[in-house]
Every structure is written in C-alpha cells, then in structure tokens.
Amino acid sequence: MTVADPGVLVAVERVSRWYGNVVAVNDVSFTVGPGVTGLLGPNGAGKTTLLHMLAGLLAPSAGAVTVAGVTAFRDPELYRRVGLVPERETVYPYLDGREFVTLSATLHGVADSGAVERAIATVDLTDAADRRIGTYSKGMRQRIKMAGALVHDPPVLLLDEPFNGMDPRQRLHMFGLLRGMAAAGRTILLSSHILEEVERVADSVLVMYAGRLAAAGDFRTLRKLMTDRPHVIRVRSSDDRRLAAVLLGDDSVFGAQLESSELVVRTSDFGRFTQRVTSLARAAGISLFELAPTDDSLESVFAYLVGR
Image (tube, rainbow, N blue to C red; front, top):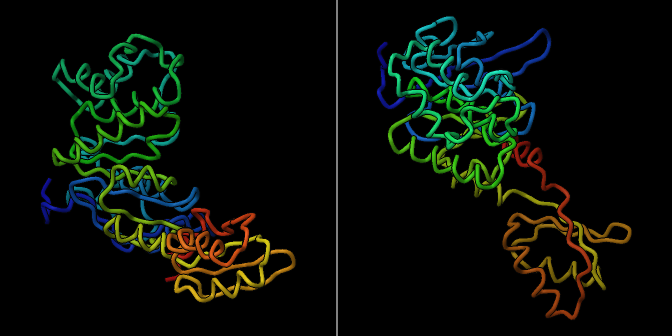
C-alpha cells in the first residue's frame, strides 16, 4: 500500500453515514497523521460510527474514508496496518488473557512467537495472563483488548473510549503508553466524552457534536475556546441588586439580570469571573451564598462550538 502524503495516514473526505432517516455522521472531513488525536464529543455525537468506518467495518453513505491511502471498507489488508479497540465488549470470557491475544495474533498472521508476550507486557497484564477474561475487571478487559490490537504492531490505532472502567493507576499507565507510542511515530485516534482524558494525551483534537465536526485543531487553542465561551451563572448573595451593579463594571461580565430570588450573570470569561467575583463582593461588603453555573455540561460546550 502506498501513501500519497507520508504525514497523513487517516483521511476522511465529506463523509456522511445514515441509518434510514437518522444521520449519525454528517459531512465530516479531516486528516490525521502521527501522534495522538482526540475525537471528543458527548455520547451519541457519532464518534463510534466514525471509528467503525475508519476500521472498515462500515461503509460511508457518502464521501470517502482512506487509511494509508487505501479505501477502508472491505479491504482485508487494512487490518495489517490498523489496530482497533472498540468500546463494546469483544472478549471471550472463557479464554484466558494469553489465549485471547494469541487468537488475535493468529488472525493477523503474526509469525513472531514473542509478539504475544510483548503485547501483554506492554499493557501490564503479564501476572494475569493465565486468568480467564471472565474474571477480569472492566479496566483489565480494556487493557487485554489493547494487547490484542497491538500484537501485530500496527502503525494506526483506533481507540473507542479506551479509559472506560480503568482505575487511576491503570489510567496513568495508559496515558504514558499512548504518549510513548505517539513519540515512536504511531498514528493514534482515540475517542472520549471526557475532556480531561483527551487533554492528558492529545496534542490535536476533533470535536464532534450531533454528527457534525464542530471544531478541529490544536488542543490548547480549542481548550481556550471552550473555557472562554459565554457562560450563564446563577448567584445568590446578601444584596443581589447592588452586586449586579458592581459586576457590570467588570470587563468579564456582559449581562446581569435579577430573576425572582437570584441574580443571573452572563460572562465571556469564566476564569476571570470566578477570580474576580469574590474580591468584588468583599470590597462592596456583600456576602456570597451560592455560585451555580447553569451551562457547564459538555453538551453545552459542543453546542457552542457548533454554532460559532
């Protein structure tokens, strides 16, 4: 297989996927090269459908999906170059860990007898390799799936919610593993609905919302967009009317409205507002009882990015 651009291993061009009247992915385009790219979005955003198209498991309803310059769908040779860790349980509980990874090696035609043990050691499961997978915790099952995806040493890894069920120690190990593989030149695309997970490992990010690509680019730039978007905050204080007048004098606040027994504040800089509100209230002799963001969910973040 040949690659038109050696810096691009994954390419998605004007891709859509629909099921009857339901559009799961809507006119999405991007390219991914070596390193870790986060595919970020709330549940139901279309992340899994997109990964399944990249893995060749689904055909796009429109557009083109290529991996290493080759159309992904129905090309068995693709699997020599791609490792997939799906979100769904794809392990056999009656097999032990070593048997599962050996099965994956056999399916990929791996002749190296040491590949299985190296893959198991990479995910830190050597001590549990002879245990049945049915006795594994959720985090351990995630890691044995990772070993199965790594055993044939693919240059491209597709990971769907890989941190689900992992305890803090397992997460730290996986963060380090992914960063190390990226530094070695692998192309890694991982999906998550948790911003902090992506922040720990990814330099670039694709933001999905309602089947659309809401934003793409450097993670730090997009993180600032997510932080500096308009926020609505409900405030209860000892003197809401006077506090509203004080806050409107600050550059971070562009609206303040009294509603029944509380003050509703609109700010364009959440970080600055949270730093300033306490000092401004104290200087005015006003006691703060409660600050409650009303739009702090991931869904509101992604909806804002889509509307930009």
